[in-house]
Image (tube, rainbow, N blue to C red; front, side, top):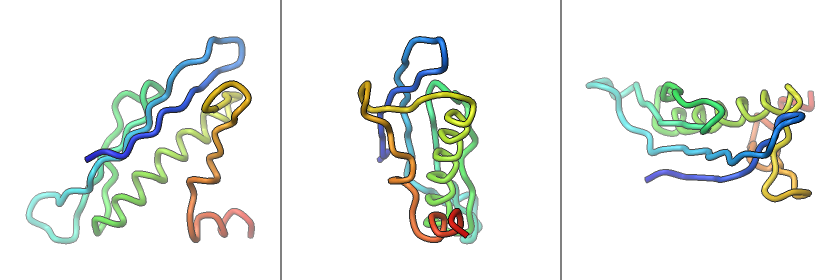
Length: 106
C-alpha cells in the first residue's frame, strides 16, 4: 500500500506542473529486526530517492515523511510555489507533527 498526495508546483517564470508524493509501506531489511526501510518518492522533483532507513518500521515511516517534507520545503526555499489549485496554497506545516513542529519554534 502507498499513501499518495498530488499537488502542483511552479518555479518562478515557469508553467505549473503536477507533483506526486508517495510514501510506501515500511519493510524489514535483511535478517536484522533493527533495520527497516520505507519507500519515498517526490515525482518529478526527485525521480530516484533511496528508501528511508530506521531502527523500526515507525521510525522508517517518519523519516520517509520527513524527507518528503524537507524536499518540498527546499523547493519553496528556492522560490517555488506549492498549491492544490491556483490560489489554494499547499500547507506543508499541516503535514508536520509532534516534536518536529515544536523544534522549529524554539
